[in-house]
Image (cartoon, rainbow, N blue to C red):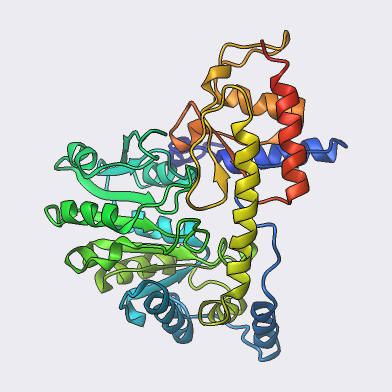
Length: 396
C-alpha cells in the first residue's frame, strides 16, 4: 500500500504524543502526573449541560447548516459585541468542529503552494503543520523571554516578502502565556494597514484566561478589520474540550470560502453542541471567571515552584495556563544512564524518571524550552514539581 505524500509533510502533534505516552505508562501501573495537555480540569458548567439535555429532548438531532444554526451565529455576534466591542453579523460567522478546524478552514482558504505564513515563536504546535498541509512556507520570527515572548512591528515588517499571505498569532499565547496589550496590537495594526494583501489570523481561544485584565483583539482597529480572521471557541473558557465547537469571525468573502471548504469536510458541527454553545456564549460567565480565579492561584503556586528550580529561566505568563521555562542549562548533563541533549530528552527524562509529562519546546518553535500546564489540581501540581526537583538533582 502506498500512502499519500501529504502524510510526510506534517508531524503528529507533540502534545498528543506526550499524552499518549503518559497514558501508556499509567496503564502499566505507574502514577503519572499529567502536565502536558491543554485542557481545563473542570466540568462543563451546569447551565450549559442543561441546554444540551433540553436540545436532546427537543429532538435537535438532524443535520445542521454548514456554518451553524442561525441562533448560534447570532449568539457569537452577541458575545463579540459584549466582550470585545466588535460588530459582526451572522453572515460573518462560521462555526466548526473545534477551533482547530476553524484554523484549518482559514489556512486552506488562503494559502496556495509556496505562499508564506509568518508565525512568531513560540506558537501552538498545529500552526506550522497546518501551513505545511496547505503547501505553504512557514516563516518564523523568534521572540525571547527578554522580549516577553512578543514580536515588534519592525520584526514583522522585516519578515514580509511579496509571497507573504498570512500573519498568524495567539493572544493569550499557547505556550508562552504572553498577552498583547492594546498599544502593542495597535502598532501591529498600523503596520498591516500598509499591507492589505496580508490576512491576520488572531487566535483568541484563551481570551477568558487572562491574568492581566481586559482581553484586547486586533480586530478592534477598523482600518484592518477586514484583514482579520478572529479564531475562538468554547474549549478553554467554558471547559468544553470534548464538545468540539470553534468559530471564526471575518469578512463575508472569507466566511463563504471557509463555509465552502467545511461543506466538503465535515458539514455542520454537532447539533446538540451548537444548542449548548448558545447557552454558553450568551449566558452567565460566572463559572468561567471562577475557573480563571483558580488558574490564577495555580499560576502563583506554579511560578513559586518553577522559580525555585536551579537553572530554569521562566517568563511569568499573562494568560492561558502554562509555564514555558528555558531549561537549556541542563543540556549536556547526565544521571549516569541518560544524557540530556535537548528539550525532547529533557521531557522524556521527566516522564520516565519523575513520572511527570510535559511537552518539548521544539514542537512550539522554541528548542530551549519545555511547556508545563497548570490545568491540574493544586495537590498534583505540588507533587509533580517535587518529583521534578528530585529528578533534576540527579543530573550532573
